[in-house]
Image (tube, rainbow, N blue to C red):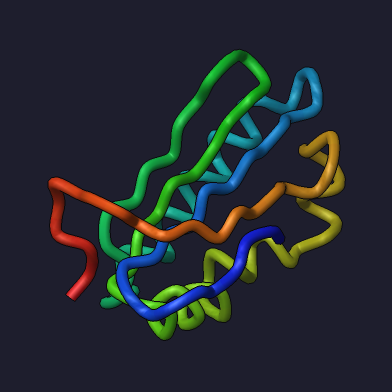
Length: 111
């Protein structure tokens, strides 16, 4: 994980994910599983699972503040990334998580 918490305000994670060749469908399923978890997180605002290339994926998720982002980390989506056997089987390397500040947005960021 890189990036600082900084001052409180709208926060986000950008997560870079590289699938092992042949494991792309497993990564898509992992994104579905994470999405299912974040639906119940009141502080998780906009959430996007994206694909850049056949093997490169990402997640962008926004929160109203540091506390909301921290609550997300200990939730079900975080549990999926902590499932070492699963992620080691389908990812080329651990997902890289970037802490980012939301400077401007056109969407509601959490509650």
